[in-house]
Image 1 (cartoon, chains in turn orange, green):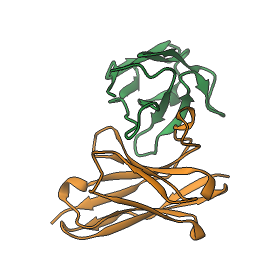
Image 2 (cartoon, helix red, strand yellow):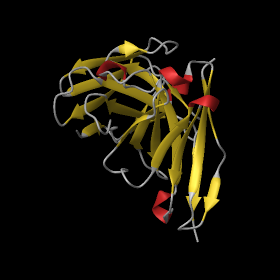
Image 3 (spheres, rainbow over the protein chains, first blue to last red):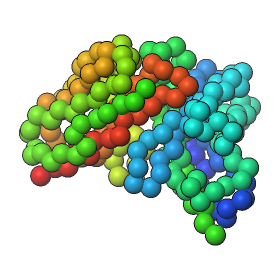
Image 4 (spheres, each protein chain N blue to C red):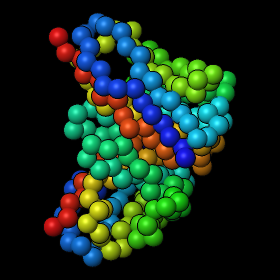
Length: 122
Length: 107
């Protein structure tokens, strides 16, 4: 059974750093892309970026380039999303999702993690 | 590429036929997916390539369209179909944008 299991909720102060995780199981982790999607409170979905754990090829949305870093450790089938200096506006639910391929017809998300709620408040 | 969904919300009765539209700001061929999100849950893939039903999704869901205009249809609304529905364009990197969502409520 394919599963993406994310790390637990976080409460941080502005200016702090954070790294959240997404562990894949039940499939070949290095053969699929992992994307990160933001959902701010009461709002819609925003595509942040994507990584191919097989070779760490990473793409970012212009809206998030320079604001976050996406990485992966294929030895433990885990992808990460990290911030070096959080802002209150980073408060949101963050989802990881599996993308079957990079070719256009395959860029949908067929499995999702349960989400990690990040709260940034002084 | 911008995606505009309509309506933003709707209320319908069990058994009704429900149609949600998604319009792209430029042509995206058939590279569109639809997701359902229930409150407090992660989104779930319903349809990809505009009209291909994801495995395990009930056949009352269907998708159509190409170019700039797409529709998601629920042929006979069921109580468990409440939630918010999002379209996503798959055509244009570096950001695979989502529509603003359509909230479906059961009367």
